[in-house]
Image (cartoon, rainbow, N blue to C red):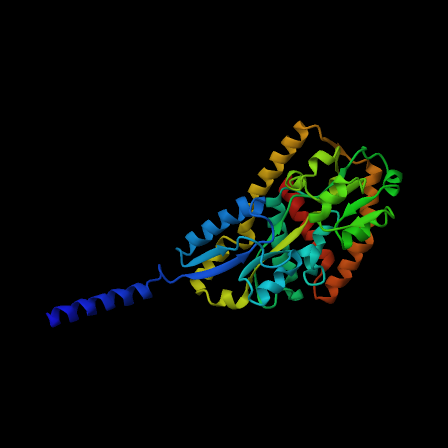
Amino acid sequence: MKSATASLLSCSATILALAAGSPALAQTWVLFSSFTPPTQYMNARVFPAWIKDLEAATQGRVKIDVSPSSLAPPPGQLDLVLKGGADLAWQNSGVVPNRLAMNQMTQFPSPTASSEIMTRSIWRTHEKFFGPAGEYKGLKLVALIMFPANYLFMVKEPLNSLDQIRQMKVLTNPGETAKAWGHLTSGVVASPVVRYFDLVSKGSVDAYTSMPVAELISLNLWKHTKYVVDLKDAKNAATFALVMNEAKWNSISRADQAAIEKVSGEAFAKYMKAVDEVNDEVVKKVTADGLQFMTAPAAVIDGVKRAFASSEADWIAEAKKRGVDGRAALDFYRAQINAAVK
């Protein structure tokens, strides 16, 4: 009996040892902090699809645990990951312009396209030009993300001229965009997008920008808007960085790192098709509800480009300080988009 018991215990120990060493069961859990609500399209459509593919690519050895709410305010996502408060997060580059300075190039008037195309274009630009800037020390840059192009939204009246803008109160994000619009009107109101509803619904502004059409419904702004103005190639777009704590990244096997990279980086662009679909859905919804889409007059488009000219020149100078040929990077980025939409 003792012999049988000893044999059974030995067999159990062997099974447990084999299980512990099994690659299928050796999991690395990655805590993901996302600063937008669970129902927002990135959390509802984009990240779940990417996470599913990442976990499949690593055969379940790397698992993503998405926090039910953000573990830090939107501007604090980089520091959150650097300090180990989360392993993975995405950061709006526009709210940390001095730290992610190279991504600010998408804030300048440029040709725009789908989120998928622009996401692919900004990654290729980063890979070709931005390495010398060294902006991701202590982090693993997993992907760069671009939202659909930003439009100008008129609360009551259509947009007819630059003179009209000079008399308007225009709501925009803080930073370079607010500075540029300040060349067109003294009535700039700078605020994070999360506060747009309060300002727009109370009639505090005549127009707002720094957001895509896709956000009209999620921010409840569509019922307080009459016209959506297309600034054509004077539009800009927001860029976000998806980053992982470097120590966490280094804890993942090289084989699984390679598997993650196959569904990240430039490949992440395919997941942004879902955002383009959301944008199209919102356009149909708000158009049916009576919002009118219009193209800005040529004089306005030219005026917006001129307003951003000094900011673009400053960015090129800053890029040079960081070892980056900013002019070449901008030209490359814009050429990528133009080639993709032909």
